[in-house]
Length: 519
Image 1 (tube, one colour):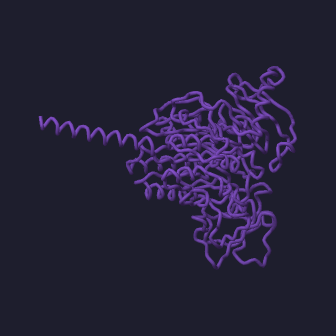
Image 2 (cartoon, rainbow, N blue to C red; image 1 turned 90 degrees about the vertical axis):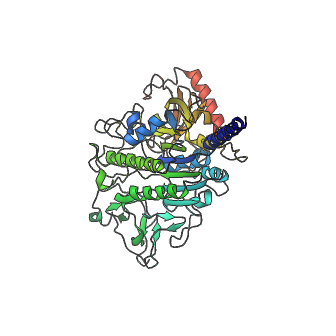
Image 3 (cartoon, rainbow, N blue to C red; image 1 turned 30 degrees about the vertical axis):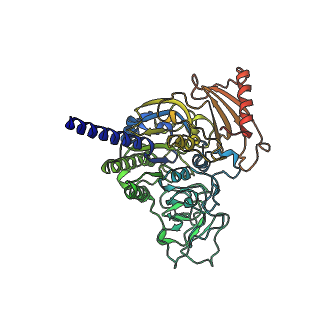
């Protein structure tokens, strides 16, 4: 009997330990968000790409849930990133346009962010890669520690590209300091005028005045200011030669920092936002990936991105944390071919197909456009110990991530925070196949406007001109379009006048949501 009691107590102890461990797995997974740049719905193998091999992203999808109707909040980068991190739709912030490299920080320090959520849950938080949400208060001294960085918004660690790889300054910033900057070669940045000759620092050629300095491929006039590494950029830069990034090594640099963060923090819960520069123009893949596809540097950059995803997954496996790490893979907006005028082998940005490759799949348009291709992006969620693999057609917005992950963490968001973010955690883990009742899309640029999705229906409110910085009362409206995405995913047949009652109902709902938040 004593032996029986002893064995019984041992069994109870083992079961208690097991279920305690299971509970810990459920409540505190590591979370890695791989947030890519300009990757379209059709750029990934499991989403239909046949000319770009993406075996690592495909494998991630097979281990998790592949979503088919998930949207970035906007069809351009800074607005979509703003919405992702704050849970507020960007059109509510008049300053949420595509920012320059010296713009002030778009997110206010008193706004609650996705990083704040994980910090409050006891996570170590980090961001590595593209930022493009502004720094400081708009007057930046790049030669001192910058006040106003991701570290001010809930990230314990940051290693960032200040804006985009086609904008100056072409340097990395780590925890508020320019990496490898020499005091003997001070860094100066200007976006509105050329830098005077008497300002100290290394002088870089002006692509307009010295076109011969462009040795890789030329861009349009906007992308013809300072020439860095043989490519014209937006904006002027002087100094900082020792701090310059290498375009062809950028993916490797960012991957190295991301993997170091994972290795340094793998023994306790961590949240990493790995915001790649791939596949934004100018596309300059590492030599090992050049020629990987028949689609030039854009396709080769996708192969490079896929390899980076594979390296992250190998790191998780080597550390023994693969099963208890949630990996979210997505993009900040839809695809674009030639961008910035950079002649990198792509077809014109207005084209729908590039040499047999349709980067937006069956959907119309891409980056800068209010059509589905502008915001419908790849979205994969993998957490092997909890989430069963599959495919979901549920409607979901990246704006909903902060409230949904708060639901996963059993955390309450502070009052008035993330006002457009809804808790759809059951959707993310595959238990709810419907998702959001409604969704808002927005775009500026080639086809600007605001749109509302409800089920298969999409109503577009067209804006004929660039209207960022204006209130909705000031914005000129050109007209409306209504599409049935179930029968017409390419948005070719405007049903506005035919389904007028449905159109007016959606129009009223959109008008209401312009002034009232989604949550």
